[in-house]
Image (cartoon, rainbow, N blue to C red; front, side, top):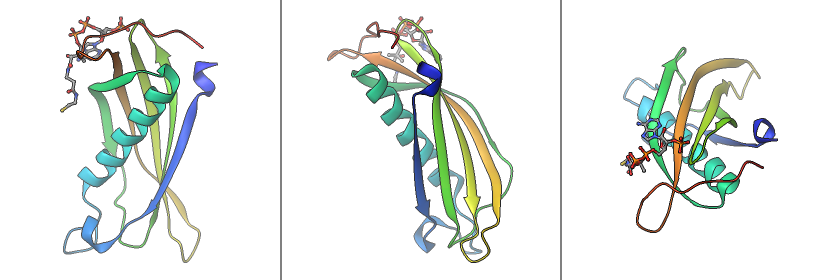
Length: 124
Ligand SMILES: CC(C)(COP(=O)(O)OP(=O)(O)OC[C@H]1O[C@@H](n2cnc3c(N)ncnc32)[C@H](O)[C@@H]1OP(=O)(O)O)[C@@H](O)C(=O)NCCC(=O)NCCS
């Protein structure tokens, strides 16, 4: 069940998210991926969660102003209080429909109580 638990996010790259030659900042992609990992882990555990680790984030191709970015996230491991969220990031040229791989990443999120201490989550 946990492998099926995921969400997708999409956004179009605006000039404010890019550098002066039109490529999106890597930090914008990281921010969107962290947000998605946070949402997935929160909805799965129904707890407060924090990002413990970004295991890997490999950028393969640049994204340009006007491209649509799509992030597809899934729970790939559930521990006692931690969850790994694997995120695949693609982009689409809106004028041509060309889709290309941008990056993939794995975030470890930990469920915490009101004091920020790890708490157990139940496998769904
Ligand atoms: C993540 C955090 C809650 C872990 O607290 P801790 O007391 O070290 O936790 P524990 O050693 O008891 O480990 C709890 C779980 O987290 C996992 N974990 C802790 N640190 C980890 C790390 N760096 N990478 C991967 N997993 C980690 C453990 O493997 C364990 O998993 P399990 O319960 O599924 O077996 C704590 O380090 C923290 O609050 N970090 C800051 C988080 C944060 O603010 N993130 C935003 C960045 S600004």
